[in-house]
Length: 163
Image (cartoon, rainbow, N blue to C red; front, side, top):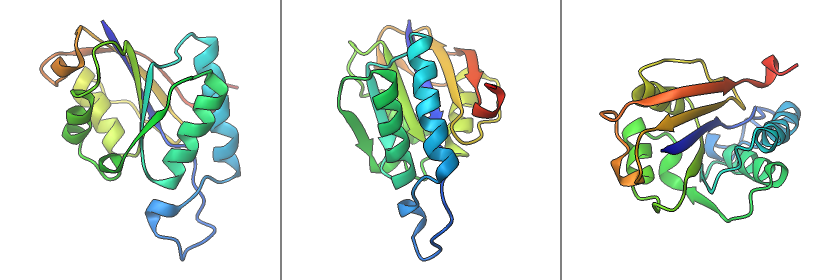
């Protein structure tokens, strides 16, 4: 059984319209929510073995905040292909993850992450910024992850619902 954490980047800033989308940073709320979600992960014993993140600035910052506050110890793997990716591209990357990683977290963007979550579980859930979903997959090797191997959506956390 493998666990997949799907994490949508935290809220980004539109303060500098001259920036290309890939370079937009987190805003004040994003800088607050990302660490809160990392703390939630630590409290629920959901610290991943591997974090794979989009290279977009807001996703990198989100991954860094979450790594710092959750207790994550390894290097974050940054993937350019996670920016504006189709769910199939995310699955292709996950299929290359080493078997010894029991829990993997992906940090990326919508609609890609909502589509990935639906593709793997058959359930659609709204994933606002800084939302975190936990999926259990009935596989022993990441090479077997696919839409044909149904996963179970265990829970989803949204910052505004945490109180």
